[in-house]
Length: 312
Image (cartoon, rainbow, N blue to C red; front, side, top):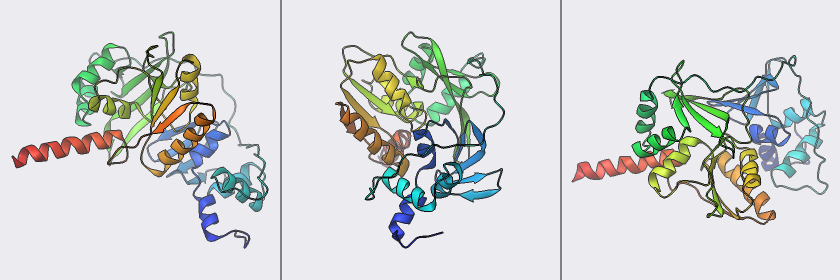
């Protein structure tokens, strides 16, 4: 369906709205698995490449426009006006934020959080992260501090999220085998996503570095050996973990956003920069000089270094 009220460019802006971020803005928990995303309370909604979704109940595809039409009872024009406002293209009359009603499965008791059983050693974790360019010293420091270990059952990397008291309240699983460039990623059930993965805070430092994933954080630590504290990995593109870190450490005045260089990372960085600058924080936005994220940049740097060594 189209409407002559809207230009082709406006239609494209609405259609290509980032669906995981949109859903999170309404309070829904989004779970990422490779190129796919799932809504925790509505697993029949499967998001592909962040801009299209498949409804297994209706057995049909949709985009952000149909998402609001189907689950917020909005008309086409209401959905368009809301999405244009959401993407920073204000209309004459801003659309009201709708209530998203997703069909839910039968409610189940909350799953208590428990860390997966550790393996006897961390050999696969070391091997996998070393292949991705992470320095041995960085991996070893994470393991010794209890922030990383190898899972016994599937040999995943387990990144442990600890709260300000040092208690494990969240864990992020990262597969040690990437098939076709896409690796397994998932949160451990029952964890506190608003803590996600963080490094302890140094009260002498009033700045905080923010990454999308623990591997990106470790990559930047490999390149900048002075990074030892005041970091959070969101394990998504929501800012709940950033909010909780700032709440736990009110002396922080500056935020360095180190999100991915792809369009989703850029949109999230723009949104967070505006939000936290309005609250009085000094916010700087950093992107890797090359590659999609900080790990890809690290790997490119190491590859160029090896090539220069071969040339000599």
